[in-house]
Amino acid sequence: MIAVQQAQDLTPESAAFLAQALPYDTGGPSASLDDMVRGCKLFELRDGARLVGAFAARASFYSDGPQLCVTAAGGLPGYDLTDAMHAWAIDQAAQHGFISLTCTTVRAGLVRKLRRAGYQVAGYVMRKDL
Image (cartoon, rainbow, N blue to C red; front, side, top):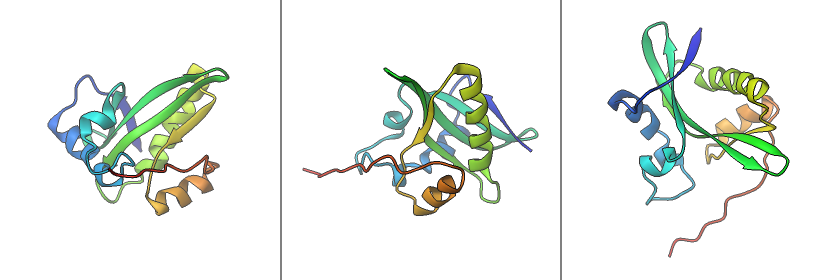
């Protein structure tokens, strides 16, 4: 079973996992890892003592309640980290009163997987590079 634990610092190993998300960030080619994790808490995904992935998440506050957003994630192949992160997020929502869970992605496979878990497309990110 994959366990989620909050990280105290961004280690080189966790940074390497999070950097896997850079090609899929909607911020474009100028986006950096610092941009993706700014304002976030960092979390590690572990299979026993082995670090198998990492993600960054933050709360956003709206008039109808707080929303939990995963801004970057990555890990080793062969592990279903999406399911582990989703279970963790559902638990956090129950504990802290989050009204919704979000992420931004350009990965069609992740969109399909999250739709099966009850997520829906809430909009599109439109961007024009200048």
